[in-house]
Amino acid sequence: MSISASQLFDVASSSFLSKRAQPSVSIVVDTNIKYQELDGFGCSQAFQRAEDIFGKYGLDAENTQYVLDLLFDVNIGAGLSILRNGIGSSNSSVSNFMNSIEPFSPGSPNGRPNYTWNHYDSGQFPLAQQAQARGLSTLYGDAWSAPGYMKTNDDENNGGYLCGVTNEPCASGDWKQAYANYLVQWARFYEESGVKVTNIGFLNEPQFAATYAGMLSNGTQAADFIRVLAKTIQASGLNLKINCCDGIGWDDQEAMMPGLLAGPDPAINYLSVVTGHGYDSPPNYTLTTNGVKTWLSEWGDLTGDYHPYTFYEDGGPAEGMTWAKNIQVALVDANVSGFLYWIGAENSTSSSSLINLINNSIVTTKRFWTFAQFSKFARPGAYRVKATSSDSLITVSSFLNTGGGVATQVINSGSTAYTVELKVSGFGGNSWVQPYLTDNANNLTALAKVGGSQDGTFTTEIPAWSLVSFVLS
Image (cartoon, one colour):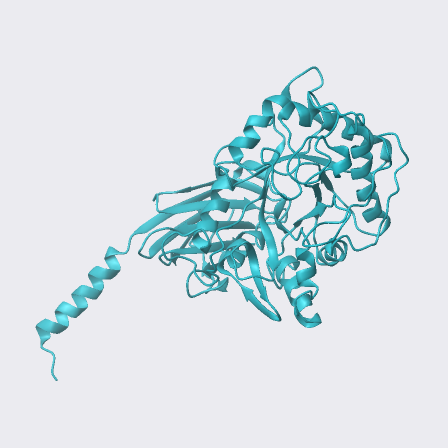
């Protein structure tokens, strides 16, 4: 079959027009304009999920080490830097209950507590050891509830309030100080056993009377306890930062802020981090914290659907693209310093974790690789810096790391590839940028390095429906 000259011209012309038609975007990063400091990215293994990693459902020792490396080792895996351990409130370990260090009431708030410590803590203590050995910088101990005997409903489950906070008296007395002692003792057990707890919290989703461990509170009631906890920590000699209050949604946490900001001795003055979740409402604006850092301390896809290999199909809640956008909006619009997915790894076929463990098999999901695009390159201590895009389909965030390197995350929400002209202040013609790509076909794939022009512009490309991290060091 022969092709005429006119047909050859048409083919060449079509190819040329196609290349010319590819849109371009200008991305400018100004490292001189800084915003929030980054504490990092993380997850939890609460409610006995830590035991999944240690072989409860058949994961062998070699794969246990690999999962730990994937989650917490910055060279091998995502390098997650925050672990949220649950401070247990149960006197039983049936189902997925978390054991209490004081499983039975001392009889009264002033009674002598009978603390117990097994160096296991529902699998969370050895997990914390392994994570810190791999570089974990922040261990957040968070109680979903006080033990039931300290609460108005005498139950760790089904809501109830801490006895003694505003408008919640109990016949048994005021348990605020006993609960503060309890939390500090949990952190002391960890520290005496060689694991440093950095942050402590005492509530989880206090707007929701869950059938599992939980405790209700408004902002004023939380403030009542924060003042007691702060004095108890100071007297203990431990170096612990206080977090509050893990509201079930961003709006729910904002609704608690007036109570934390009010009074002649505002509780906000004792907090190091204000924490909120993304379930009822997403983190898309800055909380009113008077300058105190914020974390998105829990969020995940709880629909039950299993979509481990999809970066983008239709914008579903399990997709990697969805979580790339969630993370970037939280960083840029809500100025969060930390972002934690609900579970790191669990034995399930759902999307509530970053890694699915199926007996002795490991499935690294697109959500995991999406997190790694941020957590591996934007490290604790980095500052978010100003980054702009000339096209609304191309969104961007950027971080200046402590060593001077810059990690810029670019999301293409469009159906076509873009030519990218990236300009980063302080990096000129002798610099190189290393792109890493995650999309439907790639998992944190290192692409060819790109050299800068004399004016410091790096010209490269971003595929359709993708996330690329551009790393300069």
